[in-house]
Amino acid sequence: MPVRSPSPWIARLFEGLNPRDLAWVSAMSLMLSVLLLPFASYVAALPFIQDEWGINNTQAGVVFSAFQAGFAASALLVIPLTDRLSARYILVASAAACAVGNALFPLAAQDIVTGSLLRALAGAGLVGVYVPGLRVISERFADRGRGMAMGLFVTAFYAGNGVSLVATGWLLDLLVWRDAYLILSLASFSSLPLAWVLLRRRRPSLGAGTSGGRLDLSVLRNARARVYTIGYTLHAAELYIVRGWLPAFLTAVLVTRGMGHEQAVTTGAAVGGLALGLGAAGPVMGGFVSDRMGRATSAAAIFALSGLCSLVMGWLGGFPWPLVVGVAIVYGWAIAADSAIYSTAVTEVAEPERLGSTMAMQSFLGFMGGVAGPIVAGGVLDLAPASIEWGAAFSATGLLAVVAVVALLRAGEERGTVQA
Image 1 (cartoon, rainbow, N blue to C red):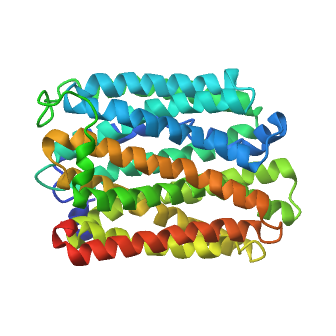
Image 2 (tube, rainbow, N blue to C red):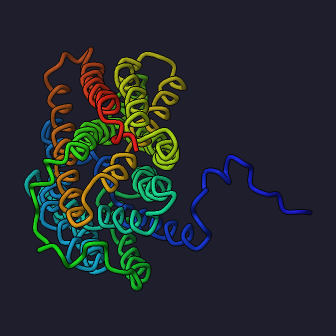
Image 3 (cartoon, rainbow, N blue to C red):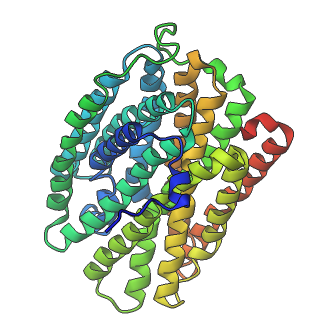
């Protein structure tokens, strides 16, 4: 039979990516997904961890957010180094730190303190993989298809979260939570040699060697970069609230419908993983759209959709289960689809010799939003009456979208160059 040509839509989607470059960025994305195998294991096992450690929702949010805190703090030290040193050494060393932190959690974490420290180590390592990875991709695709290529890498980040949730949920049916967590952590070490091979022939970054490799706070004077940093900060706060609490919400819904606690935990993790995993297509789609419609306009439209989902999600507990799952899937797509837009845009508006510092500040402030979001949501859950706790927590999340959409649209109206 004759081989069918790709549809015009698919051909256009991958426009600007020749086969060799597409294979390379796909392998980079695979490397990130493998490193992230234990990424959501804490979330999937959270009800068991809370029972074992005797911690409330706010404390559980602290442990969860410790990962983002490590990511944010490390961003200020590690990412500026990419203006001076080879990304290969930074990326591989950081991947090792992330894998070690994840593997030590099921082996050594016993309470909120040890759990937070080990998750912070894993987060500190991930920043040196994710952000330098975005940088090398942006440089390889500087001429064409940058949003699309960076979207593929960001898609791997979201896919990794979904796969981790589903895999952990499946293993929790067979093993205690520590064993399930450890198996996925050990598997993540296979990402290290792949990262080394993929970057072995990489040319130095534009401007490399002209910087001292230290954080340059003057990048905050760049008004166009500030727009995307604000958007990314609010995006990260929303994203990590949903990643941290959506599986727990689904579990609570199932328990109220009479399902046993353990079965509800594993089912909630699996459905949450499915929703977030299917949403992994979002960044590549968002990057494709923003290549054609502009960064600010595209990001604002997507954030408006995720904000709408936030406003309704927590109130759906009594509605039919297929509706709950359907909204969760749309939610998973919407919270992911604008992610690559902010990272792509900042590489376009930053000064080349200060790109590392600009990305460092965006990552730091963004992930501080990711730190605060789940903790605040956990506090709302602890303080709100039980009858409205989930509705209040997710509705508060929806307020972030209002601020973000206004800022992005105003930026697009007042500074047309921000659209590019």
